[in-house]
Length: 265
Image 1 (cartoon, rainbow, N blue to C red):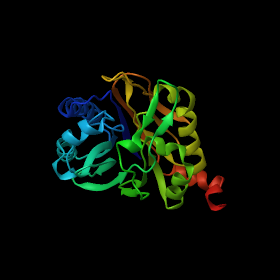
Image 2: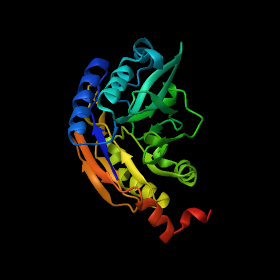
Image 3: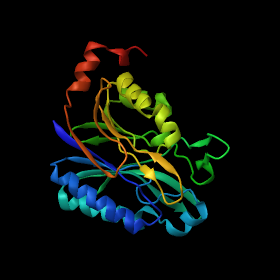
């Protein structure tokens, strides 16, 4: 057994402000005696303006937000997943990167978002992440003290083969930090997360951005912790905050014995 916490944010384009808000909520989670804390997608900077991001963003070794979270992980002896940071990997190249930090404040692993959110939801609502970010190429997982974690980010959620590969490789937890739009969140968020949990018999940790942001974009919120049988264990609807749940690490194994669907493909 261990405790996991998902943080919900309403980030803007000010790294220092976002770090301060995240720190406050991490401390709140620590007071709930949690072991593992996750933040949403684009926790440090909420923007798709590539020119602005190229001016602000730094390589991972120089990122202010990352340094701050690493210090908190070390101070409180907690594992922390930064849902994602926008990292500058060359003069004109950015990636959307999820970073796992261990309880010693060291980077355990990281994952670059593979699937870019390029969609036309309506005449007024369009997103083209591939114009801003370079897509990752590698499916990643990492070992936690309590079991194996499959790493992903937001739009990856719509690609079930990614999670199947992770679960068949031994993952019993899936992290899906997100900034789902309000439009698609209302229609699909709960259904997709529950489906990924059930079809893989994995716990889902889905911290989210939630609310109306400085640039007018609305994110859905509804951070969720979902059990391997699809039950919503904890949910935070709209406001910034923290949800915490006790995780039974034996449950995925038990469910996989009852219905051994992972062995059938």
